[in-house]
Image (cartoon, helix red, strand yellow):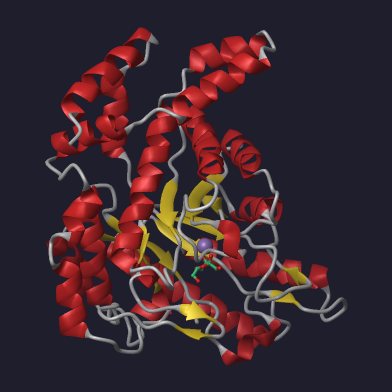
Length: 407
Ligand code: PSV
Ligand code: MN
């Protein structure tokens, strides 16, 4: 058994020697919030099939109840991102907001489901057919209304639009149609809402996608107005992309509005964050923290976007939250003064030392101290696994179909 209290005292002394403010670091960790996605609690799969799990959520109520478990044990996941057509197939009933509140969570980002339409083969908001474009816009307007009723701050947009073949459609005409549709949606948003525009270079279209990268998302956002920002989904880059670099640029431009965390090994978003290249996550958080420490940082909506196909869903989501928390903690421990000095002296070895020093720090004693102060169990995953909830939902819900999601 580790003596976390003693380890914490040693770590706190070491950090104070470096001039780091431990109380402020703990305050930031306590304020951290990560939304989990409703679709992470229902069954999903690949286009080759769905992998059912006993106890997987089907209704929005069940998804919220499962998300509430993640928040109950981690203390950092009070928001639940929803996908409109998957979660509210029969329309939105605002009573769900009271249910969420009674469970200790709230509805977070509203994701219009602009991709479950058979007519969408040529796209939605870029479709040459104005009727199909209008349908997509109408669905987003309904989503804004849901967001208004739920008090949600973010309308989170991702589109399947693109083409599979050169010449299939006029790329620039499509660009104009996207701009017009987004501007119409933007104009309907209340002041309290921001629009997050997500990009993806592939899938389901493979020749071109209409919002292929962060630069295009940036330009679309700029064409809408100052409450439109870019959403970075870690799974939506070509392998080898320096994500921390583009994150730094977006932060500098105050154009980073949101994040979808996951692991990109799958090419998209269905693997758990931190499972393959945790150092990259650290380098991304290093940029996020650097921006957070500058005066007047812009708010960023942090969300997980994982479908959890083969992993048990609630434990997978807890593990993902804990990885993000740990990574954030490590980035908070970067000695930024020493880093700036090493950079000024072009001391590459010292730069590497500062970064790996923070990255290799065992932050568990710090996190256990934070959890204790928040009244949480020291090991959230173990506490959840010992709670009996997983067995209960497996028994009571069994294996069923439905609930939306991909696959
Ligand atoms: C698309 O791949 C995406 O990343 C978008 O964020 C969707 O809303 C989400 O995954 C669920 O399909
Ligand atoms: Mn995403």
